[in-house]
Amino acid sequence: MLIDEIVFKNVNLRLAKFILKKSAENGQKGSLEITHEKIAAELGTAREVISRILKDFEKENIVTLLRGKIIIKNEEKLKRIAEM
Image (tube, rainbow, N blue to C red):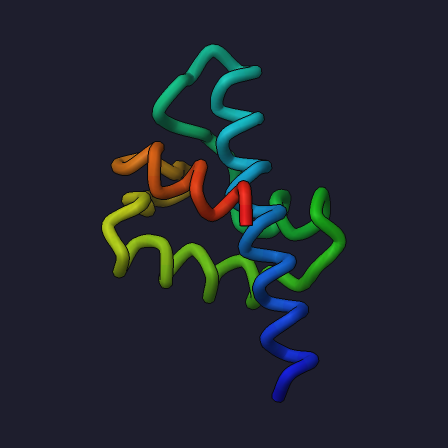
């Protein structure tokens, strides 16, 4: 169980950083047009893991998920996750 927590925390952190960085790079501050599959490939993990974490972010009102798009609702919370 501890290994799972470490792995998921690491992916949470990497995913939060990825969303912040890519949304800023693409001039789409506040949103990002990308699929879960592409994110997983870039971060070296499974799409299912990315989807699960994004769903958790959505439940916590950090992002809104649309088809092929992630909208950042709470950038401060996302930054806090990225700094863990």
